[in-house]
Structure formats: C-alpha cells, structure tokens
Amino acid sequence: MQNLSDPAVIKDILTRHGFTFSKKLGQNFLINPSVCPKIAEMGGAKEGSGIIEIGPGIGVLTHELCQRADKVVAIELDSRLLPILSETLSEHDNLKIINADVMEVDLKNLISEEFPGMSVSVCANLPYYITSPVVMKLLGDRLPIDTVTTMVQREAAERLCAPVGTREAGAVTVAVDFYSEAKKLFNVSRGSFMPSPAVDSAVIQLKLREKTPEVSSEREFFRIVKALFTQRRKTVLNALSGAVGVDKDRARTILSELDISPETRPERLKMDDLIGITESIIKTAGVLDSPA
Ligand code: SAM
Image (cartoon, rainbow, N blue to C red; front, side, top):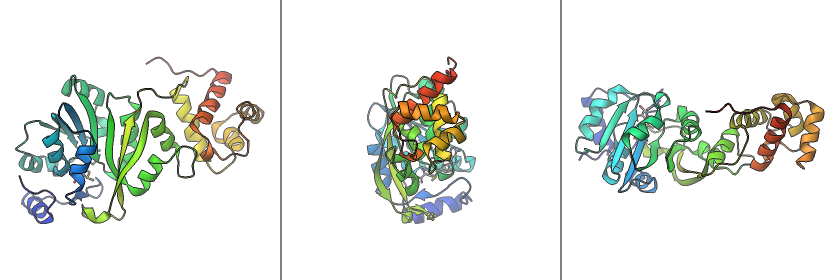
C-alpha cells in the first residue's frame, strides 16, 4: 500500500494520471497522517459497520475506513479520480465507488441496498462549498444512520456545534440540534492539506437523535426559523411581524403567552421557544405537513 499521506507519493500519483486540483470541487487532500485514522476510529468504522464516505479524493481516508469497517461505499463526483482510486485502493474488496454528485444520490435506497442489517455511519472530509446542503440532506432525509463524522471549516464547526440560543448559532445550528447532538472532536490546521486552504478546519460529529423534538409541521418550523434568523439582530416582535409575516398584535399575544420578551433577539431564542412560536402560529393558521 502506498503512503497516501506522503506529499511526494501524492505528487507522483497525480502526475502519472495527469490530474490537477479543482478548486471548484473543494479538492484539498489530507496529508497529515494522524487525521484519517482518527476520523475512521471515532467515526464508527469497525467490525459489523458500514460506512458511506463522501468525496474520497485519492483514497487516503477511504483506506483507513476499509481497514476497519465491513463495507465502505464512497461517492465521488470527479470522474478523473476513478482510475486513481482503482490504483490506490486495489487491495480492498469491501469497497464500492459510486461516481455521482452526493446531492443527487438517493441515500435511503443506497443504505437499504448496500448495507442490509448493518449499522451505518457517514465519514467525510467534505468539500466546503456544499457543507451545509450535505449536512441538511444527511439529517433532514431521516436516514437510518448513527453518526456523521466530518471535516468542516473551523468557522462552520463553531456554528454547527454552537448551543441554540447563543450568538454563534444560526438557522443551520437549529436544524442540526433538532436532528442530532453535535460536538467538535478536534481541530485540524490548514497545513494538514495539499494544497493548503486559506482557512483552518475541524472534525465534528453529529449523533443522530432517536427521537427528534415534537412539532406539528417540520416544514413550517424550519420556514419560521429561517425567516427569524434573517432578522436575527432585530427584536423577535419585529422579526415575527416582518420576515415571518405574523400580524403584530397576534405576534405580541404569542410572545406574551410563551413568556418571551418582545425585545428578545431571535438568535437568543431556545429550541423550546422556537417550537412554541411555531405551534402558536400553526394553531392560528392551521398549517400541517401533508402526509409523506
Ligand atoms: N477524502 C479526501 C481527502 O481527505 O484527502 C478528499 C477530500 S476533498 C476536501 C473533497 C472531495 O469531494 C474531492 O475528492 C471532490 O472531488 C469531492 N466532491 C466535490 N463535490 C462533490 C459532490 N458534490 N459529490 C461527491 N463528491 C464531491
């Protein structure tokens, strides 16, 4: 097995295959040898487990996953990497590579076809340009997975793992907290990648909740949360009557019934406050999700 963390080895492989990095696809490959074994071990790659990897690159993390898990399915968009992966990972017979955009893959179907009866987790060094959409897809599709362990930009890690109701939290934080328990595992410096990106990174882990908070309409809940966070530094009264579109008197009544000061900033609202606001609005407007 070639040492896929060694810059000289990587350069040799890439040159032989005439490969050049695509900035657009977020191609920064890991060269710090301590990082991938840690992601694989903390990410649940072990006997009896199945792992979905997003964006294998030249296979440095994939190799660690294949060594530990029963089966790995890696989804890579860039078809130029396929011949490279066939070379670098030829020793593994528990690996399937799918050449596709992860956003287009029916992951529920993939899990039932590829991992019957197995506990499944996701591990990735995600391309940063699609961190939030991928995280939302993994959580919002209610996939039967245990954890998502992934590298993200340091700033995104702080935001995704911030407690709801703090300045660092955004609408995406609320969504992450709704579906999972998020924690930062460890920091990774920019020098750990080739080419080196302009920002530092961190590995986070999202442990999916068995039971998510109860809300009559998830769609309406996230619509309201998103609207409130577009006016996160205004008062909740103004955000409700502005971005969310609730009549101002009604908004005042809702807040008073929930014991929330109308002067509160939306970013300071806790999960229970956001759910309470949603339920009050639904009660008035009678909005419900249509059955799936
Ligand atoms: N796992 C490798 C590593 O750690 O060295 C590569 C990580 S690199 C940050 C991100 C990888 O995701 C690249 O291989 C890139 O081609 C791939 N990628 C980018 N967009 C993608 C998408 N929409 N679906 C699947 N893979 C994608």
